[in-house]
Length: 349
Image (cartoon, rainbow, N blue to C red; front, side):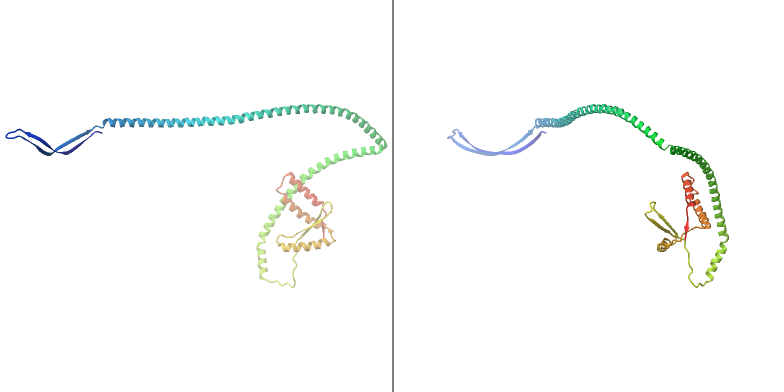
């Protein structure tokens, strides 16, 4: 930007002057001195337009240079990145190409080795098959000759044994025919009998089930009707004291069972008591019962009344257990259980 500056100052001056004057009367010369100050005003105009223009041109040049540097930097970075990617891609492709080539060569070598081995195995298999066929032919030829020889020996041996014991063989044939025919007829009769017994057993089971349910209904009605009398008797038992001179024995049902192994090497005893007893009481009763029953030899068969009573109780329990099981397997188990129970021998002391 152009500007102006004003300056003001005073410049002193002094000096001397020689002079000569003509003769008026008499001439002469002399020296005159002088001094004083002269004011000075100075105005300076500074024109900065060319300098400013050069500065602006320089700034524009610098900006262009900066832009060029930035563009060059970006281009150089892009070129470096592109070059690095190309180099990396070339390295990776070269590495994997080398690995692929190596693997391909190894696969080809292995494939060739496998094909060579497979061809050898096939040739050996053909040789083995041919040898097997030859051996089979030889074996069949030799075996056929020996089979015919042994067949003739068997026929001759059978004829001689049959001639020696001809009467026994004839008796055996007659007995076998009789047994086979009787077995067939017995099987047919047994099948018919089982069909009739199956129908009758189902009817008996139905009747027994109805009878049991009717008994339960009558028992429930009887307990309901006699409830008041039982309560009265219970109250009377509390009101009246009964004196006893001695202890009254209480009997508890106990089941003692004995079983042995099939080979008879060992025997096992088990005792079953009521559920309301504690473990100590059960253990004491089991020891006493086992000691009494194992050494006592006076076992006797049950009487007809006892056996019938036990049979009724067992039948009730069996019907209660199998009343909801109508499958063929369960019914077969039920029939087998009843058959084993009926054919068992019960003993008591």
